[in-house]
Length: 259
Image 1 (cartoon, helix red, strand yellow):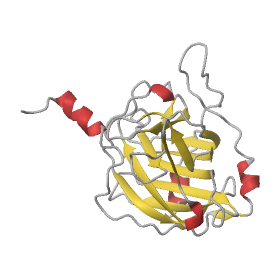
Image 2 (cartoon, rainbow, N blue to C red):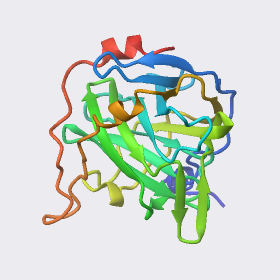
Image 3 (spheres, rainbow, N blue to C red):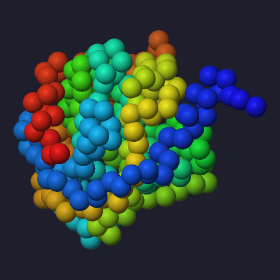
Image 4 (cartoon, rainbow, N blue to C red):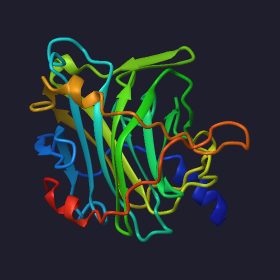
């Protein structure tokens, strides 16, 4: 028996955040964003593993290595094919696809929209119903990359129905995962209702060591997070509250990001 094209696409979509096929370095590189002054521990995926590359960064409260933090300030630098085939990218805050809080990001309508997702099996993750909250600090979009700096509150511990989990910052090590795709999400105007294509631009899992992520300036940096982008899920609710992302080219920022 052979699968038709639609069946194959459906099966492929189920493998988001599967086990890594190649080794991923967990050693962070410190990166300071020139516009906000926020310093991150960053982990960069090379262009040999993902076209255009991928970077995820994290800043944590100053006591995060002794007391588990429930939040962080995040940095995402993701790849696009062009201004219309923007695709999507995502991170698993528990490493694996299953039983972890998943955060997806994608450009749409001049802004970057985000969606929290959760799944207990290898099928399309559903909208997360917990109390995680994302507030944006800055975002930038161009034809090759999109960048988002954000505060993620209640994101390092999660509960979905009877399932729960957490990321333990006091261990000095986090299991994280990433995935990236070129096809844009279906129904992109409403983050809670998006559909996803297979991550055709790579995925992996890595054990991320935390070295420079905790910082005494965390509270000041977190106060910069003032913008909520909800998308447009109906004509009466969920209106976008953010101004469009800057059109400033990302190439300069991309080249200063640690490789």
